[in-house]
Image (cartoon, rainbow, N blue to C red):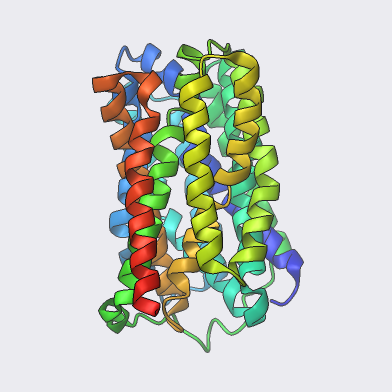
Length: 380
């Protein structure tokens, strides 16, 4: 699988499953209103999904290690499509949470295989760029998936947003089925599960950096729609446009992160965390002003999009083997962070108000910076 086309096909699947996970961000206010619950409780739809991925990621990969990779990719996308269709017809909030948890078991399977293929089929110097192509699916979900789901909810109903997500997954399934060839060498190279990597202090340090970085990102971003609605006073269509802007500029951010992480991993990570802090300060100061927030959202999306890629490269560079296994560990770590960030943001909203949610991200950013400098000292 040396063609970039195959990586873009895999990225299409990432677009589908990531839209399922994060597409709910833009419709949380409508779901909270529909079921007469708090926005914090509605956030369970995001945090419960992330919890399943985090806890069961490596185990699911181990269970299916003897299956053909391409079949696993197709099966995962099929389960995502069915779960989204069911979600559109659930009339009970707890039932909706449970149905959304089902595809979460297969999320790490798809992610781990896709990232592993990108790493194994690229030159060492181009590894970050190849991984960047896979993460472009995440960026595309932010560009199109989340704002489209939000727009569908505003125009029709929150149920229609889940049906749209189901269609996206069906299209991704068709792409993988008909455009992706059999994954080279899968019969000769079974998945490796080298548990000795857990003795690596470098791995644990990079996992902490990734955890706090992603938690900082989603502590605020997870409630972006609610913030724009209640603080900036935007309506549904305006929020959809802002989410689209956020994701569109993110394409450039994701590309830049892939370019510079290969050569300057410490400097790129440090720059990301510092600029993310500065943007949150601007949101806190000007979040109630309509026009300034448009500019802030543009810069926010530019920086935010590179966070997952930067975190992935930091973690996977800690060890030299066990490609699928280390990517499943990263996927678990990342989703633990999404869950923790969402819960922290929800806690902050409940106790200090949506207008002060930015401070919850500062806590995580500070811990990420501390971990980053600890890693630098370890390598000195």
